[in-house]
Image (tube, rainbow, N blue to C red; front, side, top):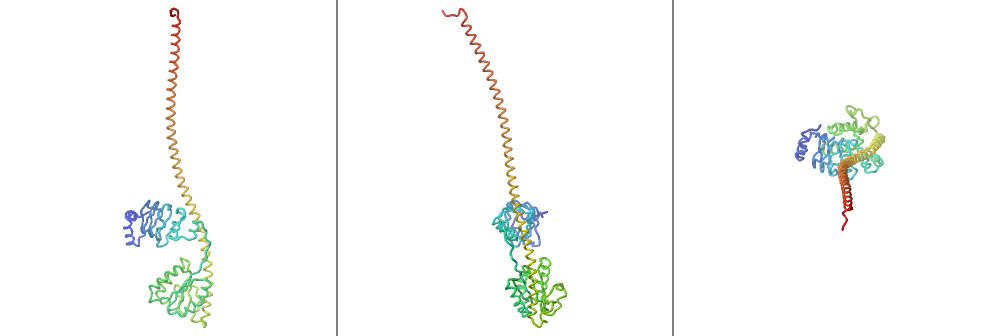
Length: 383
């Protein structure tokens, strides 16, 4: 059920609603099932709001803010100014239960803003995009103290990058420029398919590594399928704790610093990463193919729902026209019955007059005959 306080505040004053939102960032507005028919929601902050089952028919969302906003089990065909909505982050639209209007540039803008795939959007437009290739994004993190070993590995990885197998980005753990480093790492972790950490005592000794890289990365690995590979640069007890379950490189976890030939160690690492990239690419392409196939089916479902809604509207209109025609017919039938009754009454009157006229004509004829008889009687001849 919707929160009555939230509903009243939003309906009464969008400015006060936005101030309340800014002062209560932890609150998640519950507008489930709310009647917002024709509501003026211009510039309203609807981020993280639950709009499931809300009646948004004719509502004006121009310049409203969406981010992680929930739409489900509702009709969005008459939502106003879809193209003017501002998206701070993707939103959740349970498309199998939502009715959308016919595809248009405005709807495409809205769907992109909510984070829908190009496969889905183009399919709604009428074009089936072919499955695109995925290039593995590899992020490499290391300690500033290991700059020399990093450079050696980077030279070997550049060959894999030049071959088009990966897109390589990297960042040294920096204590002096921590804020900038943290921002870069967070952005990288959001997009990275393969995270390679160069493990050494200086690297593991940094609290920033654990807080900003390893713990988030392990969470991403579990929830989103990102792959984390530790590359052991120097001898350190890396097996203790969170990293112990991971498969290290070089082979058998022998530190690079203990190899007589560092280039041989780097070559072994690249071979292992190439195999990981190949397996990861195969998995991601299979997932992309499944998502594409689902999006194509979903587009057909959305189009069917839209057409069904249009037919229902047309049927309602037709039913209304039939009802009006039936009412008009009933009224005409009533008037026809009244006219028929009037006709019958007038016909009876006419017949009565005709009968009277016939009677009078008979009487007139009889009188005329009598008059002629009197005139013809003896003694009535003229002199």
